[in-house]
Image (cartoon, rainbow over all chains, first blue to last red; front, side, top):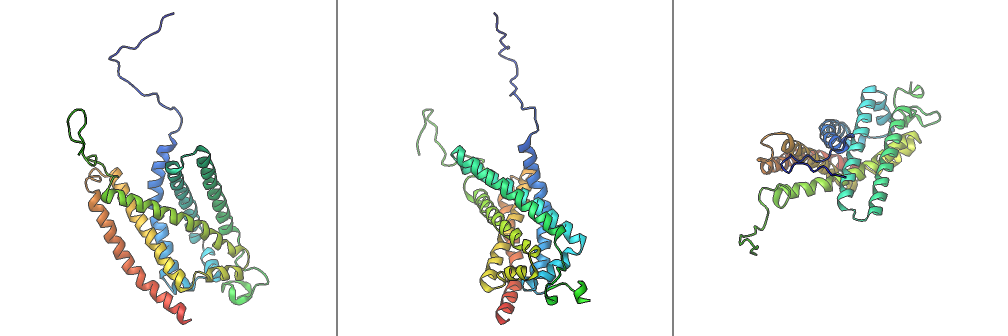
Length: 150
Length: 137
């Protein structure tokens, strides 16, 4: 049985993984989402902390008023998804750097994944499914467009 | 300084590195610390916002905990962390994608610090006005 030995001068090529290069797409995602998040979060902070009465002006009626507008629903939805995937991927990078025991690393990565999925799901449902005018609530806590305030 | 077997001097720090010592390293450290802090705030922030689905009074009760002078200072720290992470993130993108990015990474670090100071100089007085109106309330 003979073995084929490559010519010593043949150029070396590292074996390539043929699948999707997830680390590359993660790298691209961090930069692309980061740029969009700067616009979304700076806008969010300006509207909620700087304009009007600042954080003092935030209450149920304020939030219900914002989410009555599809513009702010989409704004907050994008912020939620982009930020949690960006933050989750960043936390994954940090865990990979510092968790030395394989089991510790697995547990921490699973905890990050679960918290990101739960928070995205919870936030998405709340933005679109919450009731801005719940029956039986004190009228002075509700936004002005609710029937009880008409 | 130690000499190796070839008789050449071993430099204290490898030349041409961006991430060991000085501005390159400290911006990286700050980017990690601010990123982790923002992540943990986001975990809490979605939960407190979710109270809108429980009851208007429940949401107002939890958001009222953000409206006191100590949390007012906490909001300054949060905004400071976000603004640094944002501006240094642009610096990282420029290092990676701009042909002269690595050459100017140190200058860009001080630009980040400068823009951070300007942004915080705009936000802090506004936030102090809000805090004082909370105290007077």
